[in-house]
Length: 208
Image (tube, rainbow, N blue to C red; front, side, top):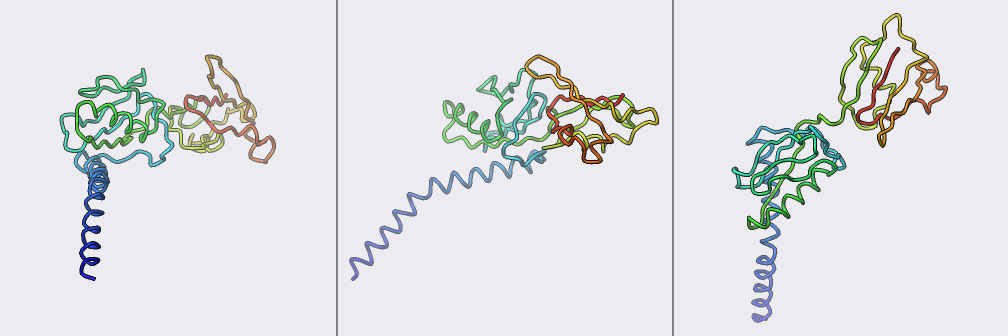
């Protein structure tokens, strides 16, 4: 009985030792995220894990215990960011988690077990434009699944001269510009709901 008791004890110790590296990695990951959110004063602009990073977004890249590498960087118009040791890293088109994995993989050449956290602190790539006979024309942040009708609700109302039946959306895709009609009155009545498009980054709503 003593033999089995000792064997069970040694087995418990062995299992604990095997689990320590994974526990350390998990702890380091949480510590890196905490550092990114507190030490640098960063707050995530989005918590959507499927968010795709775009040009002009601002990222907080935190490498645990590596202040010389950690920094807040903008995504350049070419979609890349610049980091010490790695120089240019492609960021646009990736989710924060995918960029996290890319930087971690590349840093393995220089650091032992790097712990990287990527936080999007400012969303500047997801924009649409609202022009014409509205109260507040200009550039607006594009929210997930935002429709034309929802976008117009932020426009500060229409001017007395607005032609609500002739509103349209301009969209550039594959180098070609497309025009989509939007009859405000019909959409409010539930007529032609297909005109109430889900907006894409770069769309322009024109209220003539």
